[in-house]
Image 1 (cartoon, helix red, strand yellow):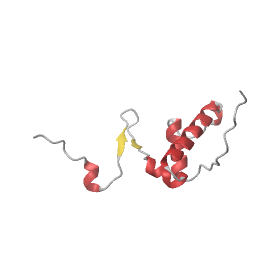
Image 2 (cartoon, helix red, strand yellow):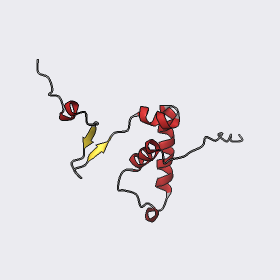
Image 3 (cartoon, rainbow, N blue to C red):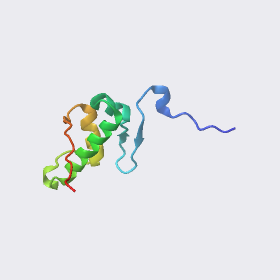
Image 4 (tube, one colour):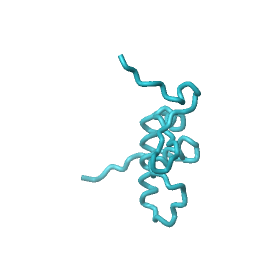
Amino acid sequence: MWRRPRPDWASKGDPPGRFNGDTGYLMKIYTPSETAKQAGNKYLGVLVAAKFARHMNDLPKERIIEKQMKLTTQALEALVGGSLHYRISRRRRSEA
């Protein structure tokens, strides 16, 4: 039976990533367990990163001076890196 050869990084111990053919850079992969270390659990971590990405999307394009990455990648990088601080607030109930 034919098996796929082992990737080069598996023997060297390098972190996994994906090669982007357009830019030629290795893209970092953020796992839910990495977000859980900063946020307490993986669901809250992904939710916080998604909210922050939406907030960055609402900013005018002139104010965004970060790297040219996707907003979700920037948000996950900020959360995992510890530079994103947040607080949990109670949800407002709408009057029906």
